[in-house]
Picture 1 (spheres, rainbow, N blue to C red):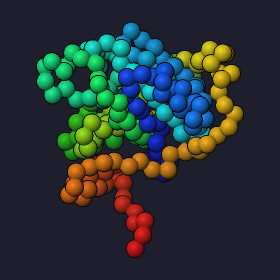
Picture 2 (cartoon, rainbow, N blue to C red):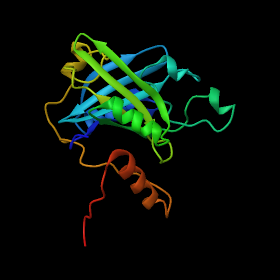
Picture 3 (cartoon, rainbow, N blue to C red):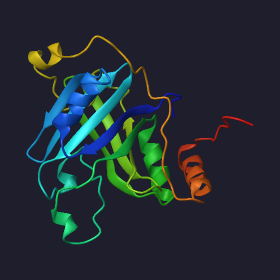
Length: 211
């Protein structure tokens, strides 16, 4: 995997417009892309090299296999919840840039990691991207694995540039340059299991921050 491997972080939200406003006004992110379907509204925000994807689900039930980018952020625990809109906002998808994505996905599958979305290719005029999504060992967290070596666009295929009026609202000031790290909350006593999972499956190693 690349040393700087976070492609984007995805938020599942109930009110996307409000989050867009906050990130633009308070944190000086720029709106660089949108994707609206009958099922979803999605916005891409950028500051430095840090990219955030906001996803708002519009319908109570979506067959996720029909949408290349949709992964539910609330896991249904009952049949009734299955047909209701998510009632919580969640940062749930840490998308990682990888090389040799086919080899990595096959290795993860052999290791028993759940493949939420199988390997597929998406393309537009800027090139093509290969991606797959896997379930982590933590709560509702997933990782979309992305090989974008053949892509020249700002984000991912099928996302559109905002209109000129929206682009003019982007701030020239930058407060955020990049994602330094990602922190997961886990139950007491589970940290060793989590560390081992990321070490065994992604080759990540713990680094000590103090003595």
